[in-house]
Length: 302
Length: 228
Ligand SMILES: Nc1ncnc2c1ncn2[C@@H]1O[C@H](COP(=O)(O)OP(=O)(O)O)[C@@H](O)[C@H]1O
Ligand SMILES: [Mg+2]
Image (cartoon, each protein chain N blue to C red):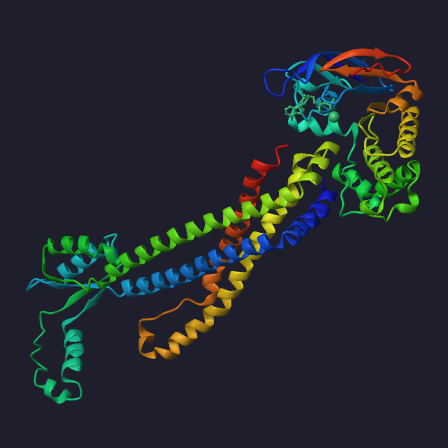
């Protein structure tokens, strides 16, 4: 198709949408609902994963040594642990640090009571490594490994909360994918119907065009434009709505549930929309294109 | 130039709509096709446009072998053939000017030549003053003249007319036939399917008579050999 026909066919595409208002609106509304849900799920899942990740990063296994190990042996064990793939980082806590943390927690403002133990650290052999993991789900493997390692007396696991969190995240992910796929199918179906109705309304015009010698591409172009424009409008609307809601909801949650501020860590809108905008536009336009092509394949082969 | 060799068309297996047609129409001829309704005249036109494929036999139009022409090359065949129907088939939502310009836009003609050609066509069919009218504001004869202008605006070498005066009174029918004759004199091959006995007798053109899917007579210089 020639460039000069592009303007003409884009105009015809918009005419189709206008002439076929009810169906165009229904398609746009479904598409909007679908991509709105997609955006909401995406925002929730992404934020959820972000929070899980944060929680996971604080998952840590504590390793205590057998009695009477030399500093050299402890440091070798440290290097060994650090080289494991599960491990993000490790931190050595000396007996003195352990005692001072403990006594602060335990005796609180009565520090003078702790003074009595000053020269006789009750946690003298309680130095340890805190091992931070890359992923909470790797915890069991690492713990088994550590428990079988020489020179280690005890391995304290962290709460398994984090790994079950990941499972919930995966479940929510699957459920939302299923719902979104269904809505996408409905969107394609509606766009196909919209285009088929457009084709039916313009049946006479199309048959004249074909007799005059229009190429298939020229005949089909306005309907592809129609589908793509519906898809585009149907993806821009939900993006605007979600963008507006996002900041407001986060603000609301953070002020209403300020106790939870430590647990609830939200991603900034910019990092959500950096992905959500192109994906939503791509899906919307793609669905519009696909819907119109499928409809045309069936209905303009005169 | 149009050549049919032993062409048969069956819609459903059984009685063929066209039955072993041999026909040759030279460039620049004017030909009437007459015959009872149901004798296969419209089918013949549809085969020439490759709206339908022949069941057997060979068809050539302007050196193009229609049996083998691909879907992709169909537009180039059709751009060289203009068609006019009994029911005009104008677009009701566009005025006269846009109906004719439409045919040029559809074949992606450069926009700078559209205006001049449309106006030339309108003047040829005598409708320059009605260029802004919509089809429903025109008489049948005027609508058919717009349809002829549309069929010719892309300068095809062949014009096919399927009962162009079927919906018109005698006066308007004559008007249309005179325009078709004029177009033929300018070099376009013209094939007119008609029932208008009086005009066929008067115009003294080559006349092909069909019956039951067969050509039963083909005479130079007119004459309507047609018995029920
Ligand atoms: N689409 C079709 N399907 C089946 N039979 C058809 C179709 N079109 C025409 N016919 C049959 O083919 C024969 C020729 O029809 P047609 O070419 O329209 O004749 P004419 O134009 O001379 O009146 C008729 O018997 C008609 O019933
Ligand atoms: Mg007929």
